[in-house]
Image (tube, rainbow, N blue to C red; front, side, top):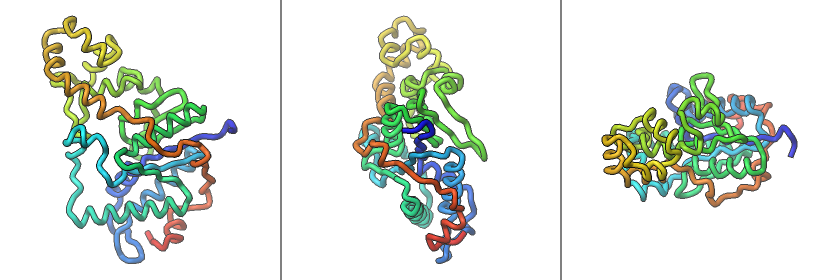
Length: 284
């Protein structure tokens, strides 16, 4: 493996959501149906490829089946409205077209029933890091901060730019090490996934507790030493806290190909969003 080899993992659903909602529906295909999400996705993906110049690439998507976490907590991610039936159909149709784009570019887009794209990316990032292949993950999901390490960085898009999280950047922003992110979110909860935290314990308090006690387990082992109000809240919501940690912990052992050769990819420098859409019989 050469010194320039690198793996890029792009959260397909996150990238599509951003572009689908950012562009007008007046962008249509040859059949007159909106393709704003496809058009934006193609352009954004090509910009990412040029920026990071990966030698290995995967764009995982969430599968249509519910994640295993829903069986553990039925309210998991239930607070995310999808819109009218027409809007849902339009969204799903464009996701299918995006998958066609990825096939056209010979880009792997793994989906594994019961697991989220985060789990797929966590599994691939862990395997690549073990092989000393540098990894950049592109996603807006903060759960992925937990897999950041010496070989793994998280790029979170923000407007036309974005934030890059290394282990030091995670600690500077959140006050904990990447490995402590599941414990942090177990205490503070995650409204974006409909996960309630321990009442009275927000991000700063949770980070301060973990700075002293390292893990959720160690924290619960020393409840008598905590202020009465904190100890009472933690004691009353113990089951919730440990369930939360399980819900936000990314699975890094998903059953899928992890041999890096399966994700080797060649350059798309000759493509533009317009030429690729035209090749697929679409027009923006």
